[in-house]
Length: 62
Image (cartoon, rainbow, N blue to C red; front, top):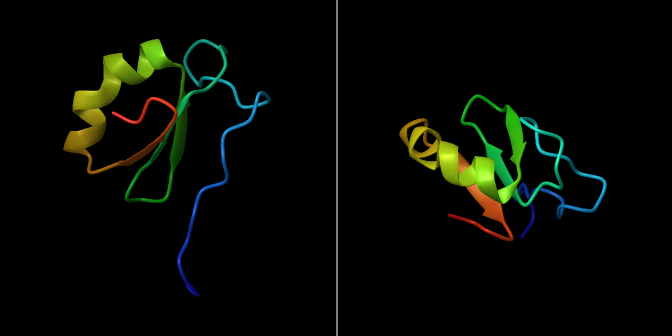
């Protein structure tokens, strides 16, 4: 669709912002910020990300 913004697919080069492991989840915040998480940290922060109305996508989209 024209005008639709999409996030690029995660690759092996994408790393978790918390621990540096391979990123499995991308969280895009309503303010425009973006966070990448491994599965472990995505699970740990899911509740807060949902409170912030983040758009969550990736292999382990929660």
